[in-house]
Length: 371
Image (cartoon, rainbow, N blue to C red; front, side, top):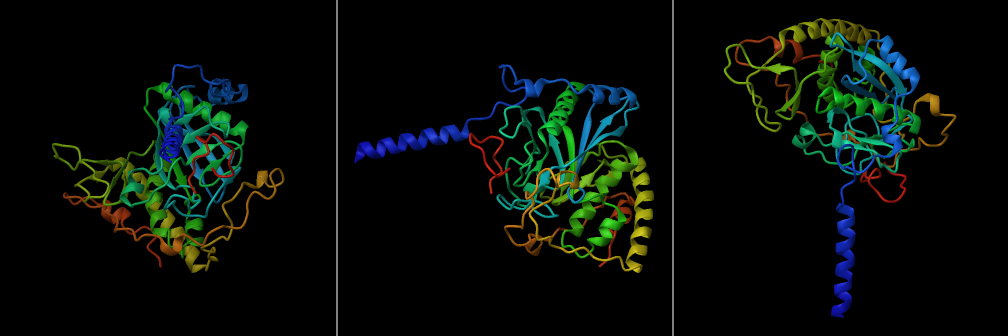
């Protein structure tokens, strides 16, 4: 009996050790990387970089849009601004519109994420994969959990953004090359849809609207400046392009779950964003006056797929397996655009649009229908 129990303990220990063995990621091992992770960009893409005056190793920003099922790669050009390089149709994303809340809810994340070299997996069972880094500081402050949420190949998803192998090969190579610019990470912006007045008006009854309006601030900063927004978290909210108030001797220190410190938004960025916000609010108000139809809160489907892939991969978007997540979405705290020197940031951004399964496939040793 004792011998049997000892054998069982050894088997369990071995299984646990195997489960905890870290995957070999980009730059993590001296062993040669597989050819799929080191291949050069296609000649057409290299020509496009030259045409757009984008150095091969300059930084990138990746933008994800669920409803449109599109992934954009923006790349820094010789002026230091980010310009759109290429738009890829997303082959499969899972869940519904709205943020990921907990492990196993099948939701693909929404928010702002930073990808470092060690989050690049050249040995993924889903061809190649890029870990988004969920949960980030915002997610943790809001007590959201989950793990190994990826952009990867193979066109299967359970909480991830799945591309074709050909697509992820290009995206992975662009990400890999961007680290040679000297930056320690690149930014991923994940949205429910393009944050236009029309889309926000269509989804005006969705319980996630307050969260999406918060993301829109960062979106507007990026779109009006073509610069990567600086992202901080305090009072369980995102803060973008914050800097010390005038005459402050120290930079603000942000505690994701604590009270926001005094700060102001970079004045030039705030000015550009304000112009866009005002125009968007006028358009939004007109759409409400025109009684733009409201989109359903719950799609009834498990995710989506770009129409370019519907004929190629029939039946991969199925009926949802769970009830809507929006019904128990946590209440967000008030927008903390405040400071101690009379800054207008709270007026500019505080009332915008004020109308009424473990995702571990990239590391698993077996093939799974989950992400």
